[in-house]
Image (cartoon, rainbow, N blue to C red; front, top):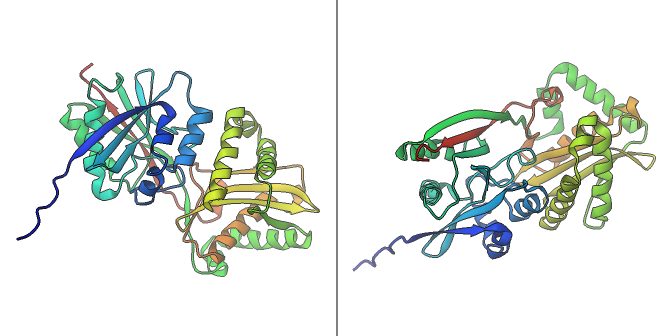
Amino acid sequence: MLAEKPTQTLSTEIIKGDAVFTLLAGEWDPLVEKSMTHTPFQYLSYQKAWWDHLQPENGELNTIVVRDNGELIGIACLYVMDDLVHFNGCVEETDYLDVITAEENAEVVWTAVFNTLCSPEYPDWELLELCNIPAESPSRAIIPKLAGQQNYTFAETVNEVCPIIDLPATFDEYLAQIDGKQRREIKRKLRRANGAGAELVIIGLEDDIDEAVDDFLTLLRKSTFEKRDWLTDGRCAMFHDAAKAAMEAGILQLLFMEVNGRKAATLFNFDYDGRIWVYNSGLDPEAFGNLSLGVVLTAKAIELAIENGRKDFDFLRGDEIYKYRFGAKDTYIYRLNVTRCDQ
């Protein structure tokens, strides 16, 4: 006689405040690693760093946790503010967001999340505003269906573009696939930088990570007035926490271009899941400006990614022209809005 299949027993829990990062410490990241949207931004260390340093004033973290027979299968890390519900991390600093669950559990988890959101136990809200959901996420098909079942209003808009380079097997193949003018420019700038003694510096475990992040932040401030004004104390602290956690996890790629021992350009990347994620950059425009070290560093980062067998080079959000000159193609992230009609 065949054994009976265990009955599925779903349970949901609302965890208020930042206690969630302690209570789920042993379960969170293993779920991320099998999640349908698994990027560096879903990991507990990033989520905690964002909330610790960038939580909005009056925001209240109310995370919905879904279990199946006691096993964690879903995390919706959400905060409520002014009758709005957002993903933790939304919107400026975090490039990809989503519910944390395996694809085969996505509909079950989202259904449980919606039921909890609509229950009297969850804080009152009028608009569920979910930012930066990747184009391929199953959430884009599931959420409008659930909203319709509740007679709520649903709307989807393109949030931003994330230009990505599909990397070939060799750097020569990469150069061959981009625009001819850009190819010649890259080769010329690489030759000139090499002739001037410019060196690529890769920060490793043996380096002082706090000092390296401070150097990165100094160059970030010098890049543009906009970046200088954007770089608040909270964002500086988040960069430090995120860098330390990523270094410990083996996914930090912090790069500098140096000339005569002086750092002039930098990239703060994540190296995760076969992809380079270009989180932010910095440049001292007054240091060796004739060497175009920002362009040189990006070219060297692409070359390094190819040498290390990475498949994609993701510039993350923004349609800056230089990304397309390097051959990137647009992908899209979306904002999903659900408006309650029962208030």
